[in-house]
Image (cartoon, rainbow, N blue to C red):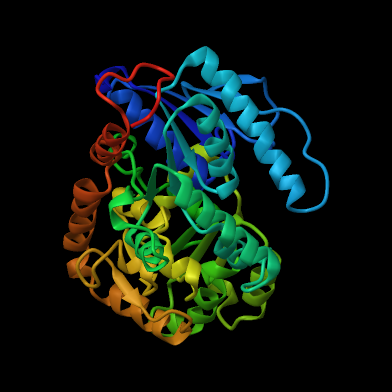
Length: 412
């Protein structure tokens, strides 16, 4: 089959115009695939909660919404939810005639795609961005080893076993699946990435905004993202007294919100370094670059856990692309993205003292900042630019299609 005529239907939990790391990765994939000349569509399940029409265009991309209600006790409710999505996939596929169903985690999307693919005779690619049982533990909505945790893991294993090909976003997830017995030949890695076309000349520091926030003229440590427990922001706040003792004019800028916001604010108010900590709250997505421009170092102090060891985050890559220094805890997801002392700085996870020392040492080493920024951006360009990474999908898709396949014919 000529891949230049390829049609891919992406099966999604939620999408633009909702904003999240999930939707931004989806946008990058779909935009990059369109740039190759492929036709793409996205279809979302019931968990896309933003109001909008049944067929919606967002940032030039086309999405179809699944409608209906899935009721009943747990497990049955999710089974019905996947059934509604599967029906919607089939309805769309009979009209639009995709060549491949490309489902993205969570596993309910994969289950729906498998059910639809069986009816339609279409191959299914399942892409895992995180193990959602571990994500639930990380965001405080689940407990490791619980019945829900084990059922979610069992469903994931089922979808992985039944899918024609499986894609993960990083080596950590890939290695975990191999350890479960999944054949390595079935797996591919599509690393987290950024669209470097979106990151031209970094925004200039806005002195008026800096003055409004009371940042002064000293160095600024920044964090922009969601305030979940696994992000380790309590360790970053706990590190501030020691950092300020070495760099009295240093400031911490925290932009975002989430479940830990109130607790973190209370911790900061009680800190000896309270005067050096600024909370901004959530800001519109089109304003984020203004706040990146205020920071000298972006800090990512994630706590050690299965989630953070196995999954690579997107934010450090975005920071590197914008020419920011990055300091991060030495969990597996960060180690996969950077080399200590070359493209970033790593410090011990769950250790405020080590975090403070690493940040202070980095502030002392200004002569090496430019080289580290250049090395980090070059690393992103070589290994995490979507314009390059998207080509990895070609091999995956080609392996699933017969040369003479057309539309809804049987997969290889």
